[in-house]
Image 1 (cartoon, one colour):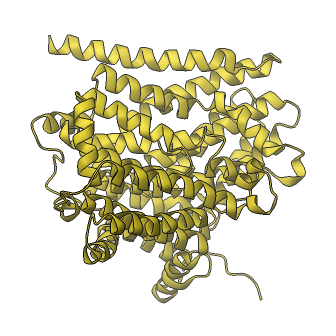
Image 2 (tube, rainbow, N blue to C red; image 1 turned 90 degrees about the horizontal axis):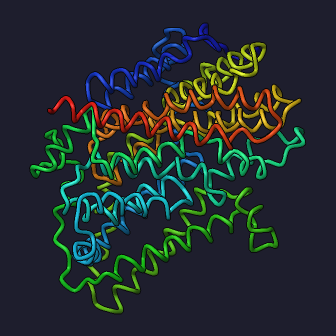
Image 3 (cartoon, rainbow, N blue to C red; image 1 turned 120 degrees about the horizontal axis):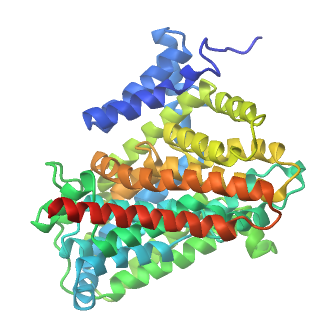
Length: 519
């Protein structure tokens, strides 16, 4: 029996569903409607206009249907992890640990700049997994930033910018494992060694860190973010009428809570999640630590870690009589309810990604990049960066993006290892950039959830900052390609400082321009 193929398969039309979803989200500010219209567009394209087949495809297709997307071990594990972590957050709030930490932080963090730097520092420290980062940093630092009148949109940006951009340059992370796995086994390349070599060439990730520090320390906000920050300084943390997670924010904490009721569960969560991740990679069966990370199932490991932490927290609170047994049990469904909106967005985003895959978008991008390999290789790192940004932005998945592009890059650069490293770094940086910008990315969704921010507000305020770093990064890859093509030494010695200096110059110039305009 001949396999079914839609008319638009592996054409530019295969990218229409995410384009519809993203465009509508930015225009209407209604993320559920926008995602649904993108999914519907994908279903109709796949079914060649047949409504019945489109509905069946959207719901029950083996590869892209909503039901089957939820049922995969990876996605189901992410949903369970999100619920368990939300229950932990609800418990820490109810026990008074978050409030106690907020009181302690108010004695040590005196300014808005200090509160934002604390958010960045915490995000950098939690580098194991981007989803884990988003939810944990948000729950810990949100009371501090609220106290210092940092807008929820700004907090979401700081959380998002210390999630994927940190994980992609952290050797011990689920992302390092995913990159290692993406290198073809027959290429003869050590995937983990290659990942380490890409770190100084990951201009977007490193540039994002510099961008955050400059924006915070110089007090320079622009675009929609400036309105949110100006309103926050006047007491309005949201700007728009939507108040996500208001019930959770209004929860009255226990008066018996102490800082340890927040710090200890978070510390246990970090340790158990790392342990759970390496456990799934065979660490306790004799596999080395690095190899265990490379072979791990990070989503499953996070579920193990969060469940163990939940049990630990039960005994921590019950034995010390911080909250009652009934209050503890009431926090479990309360945590689930607080995550219903993010989980719905996640499920619809997976469904949309599935529709895009059914239309052959990945193969279209594969052919597009492979065709460009005949051009001057000097420009190829920049081209790969731009293509990766577009693909990750359209599909909402950075892992899917670099898993598609890395095998192509390995086949193109067989005669120059340095150019291969630059090109793969450009692929990773572009994937993170597109993921960072995309409203249908699970990391972006969880950053909104962690900050208790309106999702569309987070996306629209973050885009100008991300595009600034992306533009400078593209210029950096042009320079790196030029240096790497004509020299044998590591191009990062020149390209990285030049790229970061260019970004700093752009930000400082923008600050001076704003000061001149005010005068």
